[in-house]
Amino acid sequence: MKIGYCLTGSFCTFDKSINAMKGLVESGYDITPIMSYNAYNIDTRFGKASEINNKIVQICHNDIIHTIEEAEPIGPKKMFDLLIVAPCTSNTLAKLANGVNDTPVTMAVKSHLRNERAVVIGVSTNDALSSSAKNIGLLMNMKNYYFVPMKMDSPKRKPKSIVCDFNLIEDTLKNASLGKQMKLLL
Image (tube, rainbow, N blue to C red):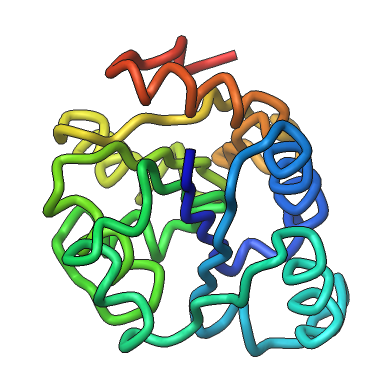
């Protein structure tokens, strides 16, 4: 199965997402990484962008799609059987829910959806149970979107924060390829 694996700027979850990506490669999936501008370019306390990007390329053995121009042909060329967005930030959730495509990731999703193919969303945002809840709800009700099961990551310190269980990405993509949504909340 050919998979486009998108990362957006929830930098604190990059290690978990990259480990999930590595697991998919080890399971035999052909993974092409796709990154938002911020995910691709910003150095953070969680790592230097260039080091993270090099690690991803070494794992996937494919170059990173990191521009809108590179992402646009995904749909017309039917490049992927399935697309994953993990981590998916509140910003990206809002853009997807409202049809905005101004990043490589949102363009990849828009282009991929033209073929009626599955998009797996791995939420990671501090406002999932507040201002982002409506966008999650909209996407849950749209055709071809499937969510990785998620839970509150720190109920006392961050009472509105939700993060997906990155260990369930492979199970979610298997179910999504059959048109089935896994249990959403853990």
